[in-house]
Image (tube, rainbow, N blue to C red; front, side, top):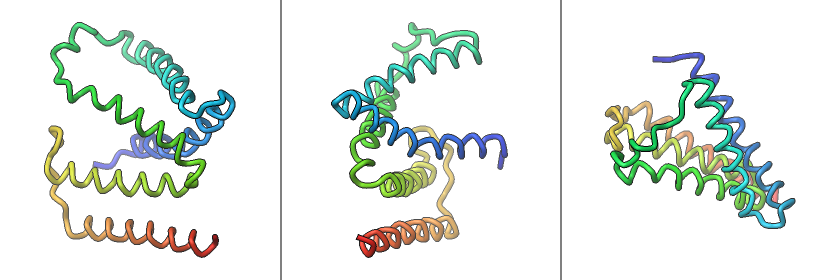
Length: 153
């Protein structure tokens, strides 16, 4: 079901991703080492998450419950760190638009695979022909932008 509130929230989050990549790259230059920027970013992010949790839920996570979770559930932290490190290191050299386009295309393909097979306890949502066509068009758009980049260089 479509929700305008969640659509706007997702759009805001999405538009901030390339901004984060470039701001983090700039911070890395100021710190003298690009890989130090994600360390600072996650410190700031942790503080922001704590404030949001306290404001919205009026509580913090019960750390005693962590022992009941499967180890795979903690890999998300490494995935987000890998993404932030990648954006910090790759976007300034590969181009922000290139980085985001490749990341978004792979996110959509990965999301469709997760939905189709119900991976990680996701609800199963089989791939339809129309959705597959959308993915083909998306990949074609990626290829076209790369040809355009090659021609302009």
